[in-house]
Image (cartoon, rainbow, N blue to C red; front, side, top):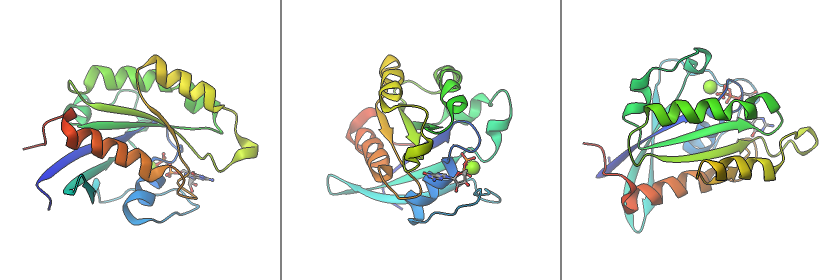
Length: 175
Ligand code: GDP
Ligand code: MG
């Protein structure tokens, strides 16, 4: 294990592709079906930043998104939060505000937040434009990324942005 370990949470509505994004990044794989998260709470993935190896501990919300209120402890130790919605699903985009307020209530000072519009490969089914995604993220002072867990587009960029931000001092590494 690397010297620095950072905890990254994936949150957002059910079905937006949180588990798929995690699987794409950690194992470079994709499955058409729902990715069930049984037994494992997180996956570790090592990345190199400025020549230094760091471990990203990737936490999937594994079904907790179905509950109305996410327990505060889930956010409390997060170094970064990825809030994902599905660009083909207006409802998942409308819920971004709800997720932002949960994150803001529960996450620690200095926690790195990013907003991700996933499934950008589904061009014909897209209903949320990039401009709207960007405007929404901008209004919360978050960077915005578009990803496809299916093709892999944009996925590494999200995690490398977070890794660089954390490793260059956004947060102190976990004990
Ligand atoms: P979660 O509930 O947010 O964890 O969503 P899942 O990762 O289980 O994905 C839900 C469904 O969307 C599955 O059928 C995935 O195969 C599909 N999916 C996830 N990401 C993408 C993507 O980027 N493009 C496409 N076309 N399908 C995706
Ligand atoms: Mg899932």
